[in-house]
Length: 304
Image (cartoon, rainbow, N blue to C red; front, top):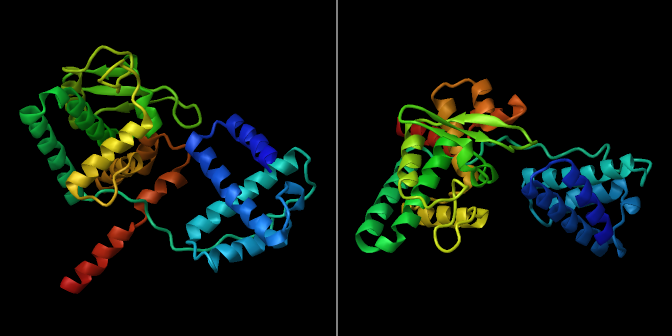
């Protein structure tokens, strides 16, 4: 089974998928492999997967595990991707997932910050900067970087990997306009992302104190290297706690940027171009009501 997943991972690597996507595929397949072995008493091989196995696994996820439709459909899609690759490479002659239907569910928009949550976040950032300047001057440059980075993510919608891979040569910035060049977006696509006044201000304040380095976002202490994704996530968690937010991740920042564009009546074609989406169907999630949107709809109905 390990050899099977190793070979499948090499195939996924060749498809230019993000490391996070590949990790998700492998995690789903490992879960299926454990169920397969416990249920059938044999180690998973792609040749031994039958349509009945896939159906029973689907029922297992819905029944004993009480998984949501999105989780079930994602795991079924991972198995389908494995079987499709196995068929293309002539390891199997038929596809056991071919006639397996996913679970219908009500579409929900992704998580984003509403206007009040965005204000709380910005206020928490401002308070953090003031505190650092007054009491922790040695941390000031690090705190300035953290603040500028979060504001940058909120006002550009860049993916985490796109942001931390930016180099100084990718930045064009003046007082009245600016942009960043994403060199290696999803699917190896380049795109220019314009910077609004808030993003420019955050960047200019960071550049005033930033140590010399080829990377735009870099470590301050020790050797100046590109900032890691884990460090960015820790920064966001710290601000989430300070602002009393349920969730704050790079993707929440990205979704917030997109939702703000949609609410300002920016067309989906422009939103898709800014986010680097290759299909408008991906961008349509931002006109799908989130759980918070539905809660507000019911709340307003009761109070009217």
